[in-house]
Image (cartoon, rainbow, N blue to C red; front, side, top):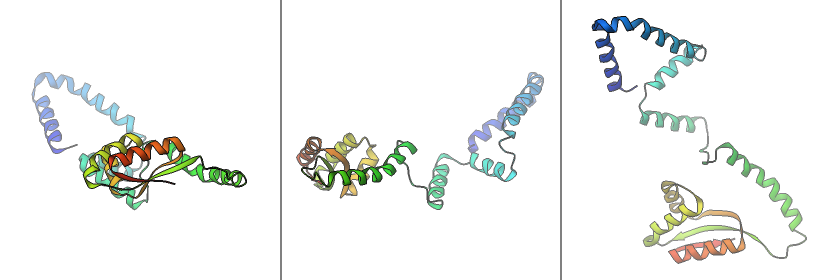
Length: 182
């Protein structure tokens, strides 16, 4: 709780204590507080955890964001994509499926149908247009799209049908980006 909120709560509590009508409602207020406290009592059975929870609840939003970032780095927790664990589990299963496809495709290596589209470079003057198009194509936020474009060369899409890959390449080249189809 921030300092201004805590100060406001203390002022309100002080005013409630001083008025006569508030004295009649104090038992009701204490009953509510006790009930609320008892509802979380089981979760905070460990005093060490309760102390940590109290300290975290007093942090500001920026301090909380810093705490999350430092915990991720200390515990080696990767940033998950927007899809969460379900989206992270799908790429893990992809290598096994790719190995099976490679075995099946080896005898019949006639023509490649699935391609990967890779952003190689971009014209500095066309950077905003490229960022906007990457945002639309990949469904990223504006900040993520900017970081993506600035970290070129980078893989944009994998396992894309040939016609869709050619459309993406033509569109990006029209905007001033260099895109490779692999």
